[in-house]
Length: 384
Image (cartoon, rainbow, N blue to C red):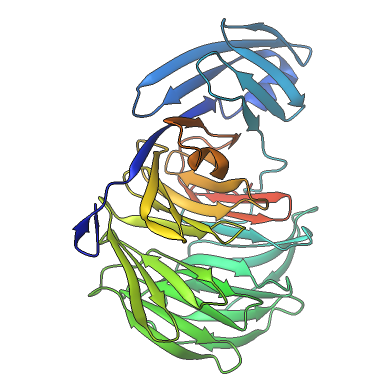
């Protein structure tokens, strides 16, 4: 790995993860057995357990595992080799009736009452999270959609996809208030600045753009690569107007949006698929095709911390609603909370603090956090 042409040595940590059968919650309700597995990447430690249940109680557990119910939909797993207990959480609900199998993305408004989700064939819907009833079908895009999110107000939606446009929608009546044109390739990611008057986007055309919503026009266009997809972008500081972007070429770049100047460049060992900043604004994380999550301290970018979270690609990231870390989605359907305090502790390994369950070997294409709600969307077309 290189930074501005010079070698940079990132500190590497191993990650302990606990995996469970995706239908474990149903097994507990009906009685039977389900499996648990602990894997520690890098150190190659693993341990397997069989959990037997009856009358919604755990009746047998492979020694030396200890498994307890935190609630009917969550388990606490302990093991002598785990640095700390791991909590496994089943979905509060899984909605599979809205989208067909394929690339799916979803977000939940801060109120928690509404969700927006998109998928293949320009499908984009706003729906009630309690009843799953569709409130609005947002029509106008052509082709597959890759990303959608609520503006911070929760009353307006932004979407982007293969047709190279971004569209702004009114949730109450489904009206498309603006179509933003400028990218020459599919829109893969975007991020809001403050309340959303401005936002950035990244595209398959190799560029990142800064947009003004009031005029539906480009403020700044930054060329990042010669038509190599820029898979991810994130606003790092609203006040300082700095943003990070990365893509298929594996290069992480940080730009000053006012001057359009690049302030930092780092060559990773594989494509960058996800970028997100932490809630406190001091750190941001990148996720790569090689399963590496790298934590960056904005106050000292020359000492990154890398964690091998999975053998396959990291596919999505989102900050926790507290300062506890970031959620990391991967290509096998796992989604775990990477604890920031442990990443920065100086330890040689850490335990993924919480694991969201229920997806069976399908890539998590989006993970979004709104208040206490975590919303994931996977290739199976389901929103959880």
